[in-house]
Length: 142
Image 1 (cartoon, rainbow, N blue to C red):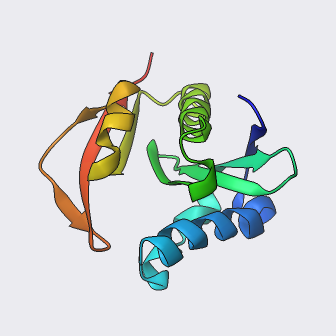
Image 2: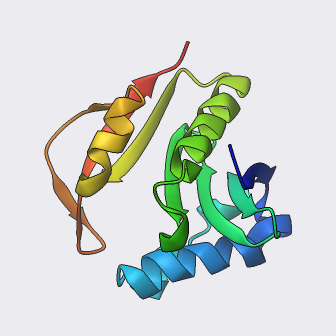
């Protein structure tokens, strides 16, 4: 990793920075309705926050206790610089540390190649979530 770090946090401590990234990517950029973005699962999740050397939040993801990874986002200026790969690697490590056998996610269809390169496989047909095409994917953890 160069120019950023990945931190583990929870909603109580990271809400402001996590919300900033999610609002910019999901609500502002992708048009996800605000009422669909925020839910009670945030309180129970382990959150991963990517921060630039300046301390600016640049990416995030959340891992739910049942092994679902979601809300993964990277600000446009930081895409293609390894932030997503680092967030995913940290999420995989966090899932394994919690003894989870499988990591599941709902991938936007444009991102399925990204997850496939990390060993995730598609399960089931394409579906729409928040007006965006998605595919369920999963990876068995060792």
